[in-house]
Length: 228
Figure 1 (cartoon, rainbow, N blue to C red):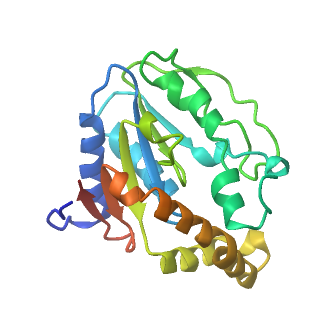
Figure 2: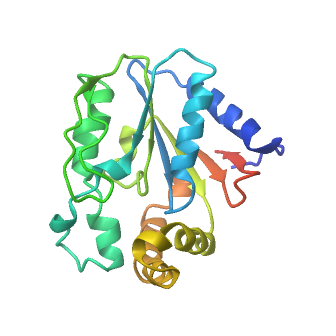
């Protein structure tokens, strides 16, 4: 992997990334994964990239957050709920991600897909309507662990949003303090559940090495795009 010359800020990197996405051609919708640790900036990147792609092509853009495909909280019983293993192995409904989204948009798929099956707290199912994607659509889907073995071969382009685990702790604590009750509780959960769960993924899958593109997002104002 090599580092291209420094881009002039975030807008230039987004424009470069959008051009790469649009250049991918398939006889079915192009399925783009935006992978990365919790609080890496995946959702923000996905939203911004959707706008940048729409600015340079008339192809339809499908924007999906894979957090809407989490397993219902009450069904996460394979491991203790507060454990790293529960976070990594039991939080996302990978079979539904395949069946409801990636396979319908892939080779030989029927093009009927859903954008969500659960609300964000993963406490209630969402009655998301079936939608039909044209063959030239572009799916931009952000979600943690999206290159895990059950999913990796179903993506046509894989982008890994890279930040340090220290930065995960810092950003996650700030972002999640309110709904977790306090900054102390948020930091505790990140140290004992989320970051150890991320370490399982980083060790087993090595997502930065598997990705087609890596976005160093430690400084969101000046990200760096690395190509394999």
